[in-house]
Length: 225
Image (cartoon, rainbow, N blue to C red; front, side, top):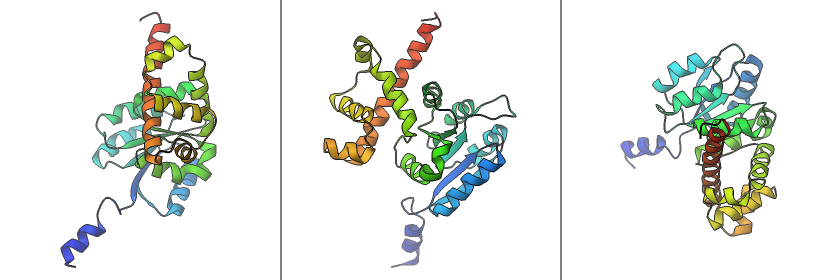
């Protein structure tokens, strides 16, 4: 094998580490998350930022594959959701995953509307961070199980007449039911006889449709719709 072909294989996107940036203002949390990423051995650290301003300036110059962004910056007026909203236009290929202590569906919807595709509660990071980064990089929408449950339960409480506006396909409805039952992605795949990647695609589409509905509902509730 010639040297040029060898070099191309060694630097191909399929084999290189996932480039991950971290935006976290708490020093203790920041070091803990960095330790988890480094110990996993599958990631390249593509930037560590303690403020939204630092990240906003640096990330467009050196785009990561995945950006982990804290929702709450205690010493800044801007929050992580606003940062993602501003960065997503200039970083369309970057996957944004929110890291938070907030276990509420409202923050989840706001994050996804801003352009995030993952949402991990910090207490789950010890066990799930590496897995979640790989999942979001592969096109999935990882989120902590309790957050997914809140979201599904909110959908189940929606009147049938409004549910129809989501335009879920029959398969998406089946996936949603399995989510509501607490099944893992791989369990949904086995139950429905489809691939894991298909499950991830269906879940992404489900959340896109749910978020569009909640944005409309939010406008309506303000009296502006």
